[in-house]
Length: 89
Image (cartoon, rainbow, N blue to C red):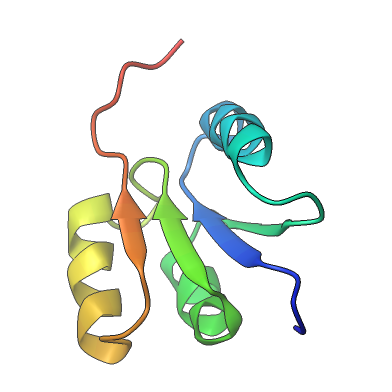
């Protein structure tokens, strides 16, 4: 992992994830690595090696709210951001 930030971006809609990734890419350090997930098991597998988890929207098999609670219980020190019902294009 090193000094390169590692962001896990989760959500069912690939267009929404892409839009959020581009917005974050403009705001974060150059070289920030992004991984994406659309299913709960993918998030649970990748979260421990991520510096932050961003929930762009609900996943295919869970709501963003329920996943946020699950991740918070499993990884209490992991920063988790849920964008909730933000305006979508």
